[in-house]
Length: 172
Image 1 (cartoon, rainbow, N blue to C red):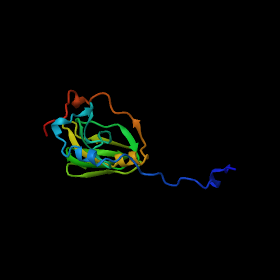
Image 2 (tube, one colour):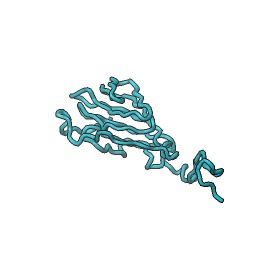
Image 3 (cartoon, one colour):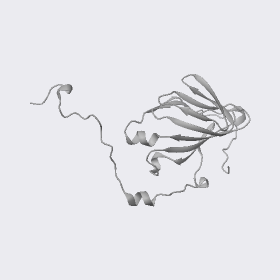
Image 4 (cartoon, rainbow, N blue to C red):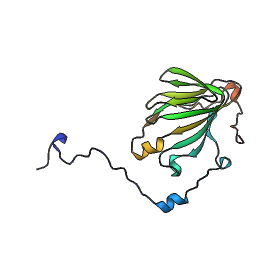
């Protein structure tokens, strides 16, 4: 007779298998260089993204790499996710809001977003854009079926006063 209670079961799964389709031929055929001019910025009108390595493109197994450009005075959505994120600040100055605490940054700094932190990225300069390179382990979390993310405040739909007509820099 089968056990009636979960804790009485002897065939419990304590750790799911990490498995997937593996093809050395496919891996060797993947591009090794992504050309910036072949990748367009998306989103806006305050925060724009250019995805170099994304979970959907199957180029990498553990990293998500994208460039963010914030219009003058622009902000991203407020959100959280289980994976951490590292922001290398290429130019500009701004701040992070992490669980209601403000953290200032400027070109040359690295901003770290810990796991499960409600956060928002902001350009503090009302006249000039800010640009950051973002690295995160999102594909690994997707692979392990541990990805959870949620938007708390949506991405702004209108440009800032000084961001009207702003277009991210494609040639830098």
